[in-house]
Image 1 (cartoon, rainbow, N blue to C red):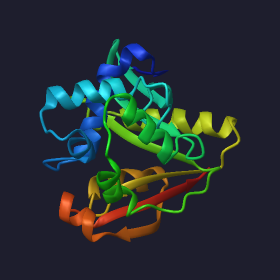
Image 2 (cartoon, rainbow, N blue to C red):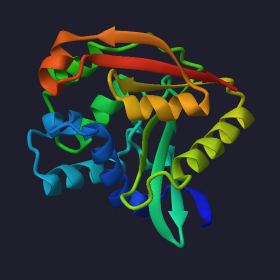
Image 3 (tube, rainbow, N blue to C red):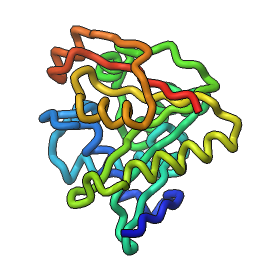
Length: 206
């Protein structure tokens, strides 16, 4: 099976929205975007996420930050990489406002209450997902290899990602790729809303 990696375009927004939603829920009943949008209706959440990938404010959810894996012309996986100095919290709030989501401070506090002090010259990875039917066939590995190669050419030497404490499958996959846990934050509010203890920061030097 041949896996092709490409940069996402605006036309890929529906697929990106589905992968962002899948990633944010990660086995939970509700994820961050269900709370931000005030609904768990898949159609509504997906519509708003699609709009979020196309805002003028280039948050970490913007389509330009994504790579897409394709098999026989079908989109089967995503990986987002962004610079925290550019895709800031402020950029995310502006993007949310663009799609009509206001008064989100209280909800975002659940997330940012577990925040880490990130190095602005570190590349962040997020929304590493594969479509149903393409699990464990090399899609994520191909996406990560391409992302790390691109990052190295841009002068990066460290990449990081944030996962939920207890996400054993995600942690195992990242560990296989060479990532290691460098920090952990347990947050009562996060546990109350999502049923997870908090977040872990993983990093890789390359």
